[in-house]
Amino acid sequence: MLGGETLMTIRVAAATAVMIGCLGLVPAAHAAEKVKVGLLLTLSGPPAALGVQAKNGFELAMKELGGKLGGLEAEIVTADDELKPDVALTRVKGLIERDHVNFVVGPIFSNIMQAVAKPVSESSAFLISPNAGPSNFAGKQCNKNLFVVSYQNDQNHEVLGKYAQDKGFKKLFLLAPNYQAGKDSLAGVKRYFKGEIADEVYVPLGQLDFSAELAKIAAAKPDAVFAFMPGGMGVNLVKQYRQAGLADTTPFLSAFTTDESTLPAQKDAALGFLGGSNWAPTMDNPQSKAFVTAYEAAYGGQVPGSYAMHGYDTALLLDSAIKAVGGKLADHDGLRKALEAADFKSLRGAFKFGANHYPVQDFYLVKVAKRGDKFETEIVQKVFENYTDPYVKDCKM
Image 1 (tube, rainbow, N blue to C red):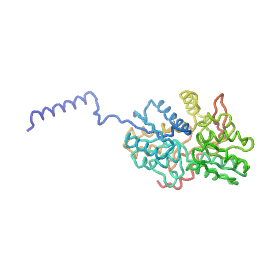
Image 2: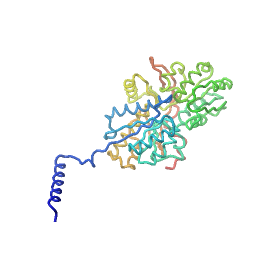
Image 3: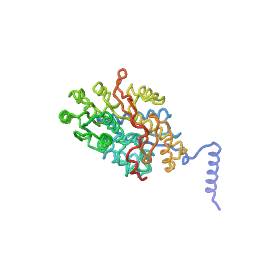
Image 4: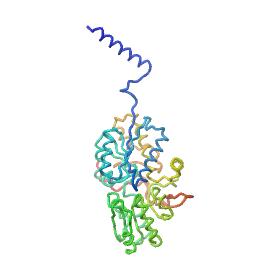
């Protein structure tokens, strides 16, 4: 038999259950889930402009989505990787083990991707890159829990290799930072340019004085220079290139060197320089035009670059995937399939994922131009259509 106290406890519990049912209340254990996203971006030092654009783009989309992803309340935790692999590793472990994020959005730089891809992809979180797209993860080291929203590193640079080849240039001088993305960039140029390489120079990541390299360029007398120098490196290189008088004699081709992250500092020094991209602020579709207007209004008139566009698209991708699984974040297989479906409207137009979780998309030749008192890139012509990266054949996912 049950004692009086035990019987009373059962009666109270039963009454409470009835009350919860009648009031339509849900016990805490079954409360609606919250989605947690960790932004791991470079937000300090000379390259910070890249990370800030990606962060701004993501946050603008979140504002337009009402602070929710797939109908779930979203909590965003931001971490600065400081462009240091050891710092990035510590910060990403904090996002996973302390903050229990469902998605890590980042990083900007490929050397950081090399450091964090394994711990994230082996956890219960998905890694969604809004920028870094190294070749190894597009090929043999592709991963079912890693998605790249931007491009494979080689591709924007391939635009300039093809342009140089089609233009009839006979000799190119190549210049890039000595890390994975730098090596991928020059591999991309050489994939399409079949002429002579006057020199192939790699400099330390973060170098800001290019006097020695400019002297080599002057001595080599190439038909054109191709340079990949992101962030503050690109700001200094372009200014020094113009000051050395080389812009008057030797065309300057680049990717990520003259874009919306560097143009506010480069200004007139970059005018007319050519680049390669999968998007530009002059993209002619209603959604993209609305994005540019909203971004400039939200961030003090700053012109968004591809980093901001990718951040915005990443939020739309997450929203579509979470919505597709009905907010069931524990359904990892379902989430993965929903991410692969990429059922959202990209600002760049046509977009889908290849078998390696890297995009299939169009690429353009772009040129630095001036709009009022603003500097931006504008589309000159489409170079590749529905273009898949060359490493997907090596991906056995």
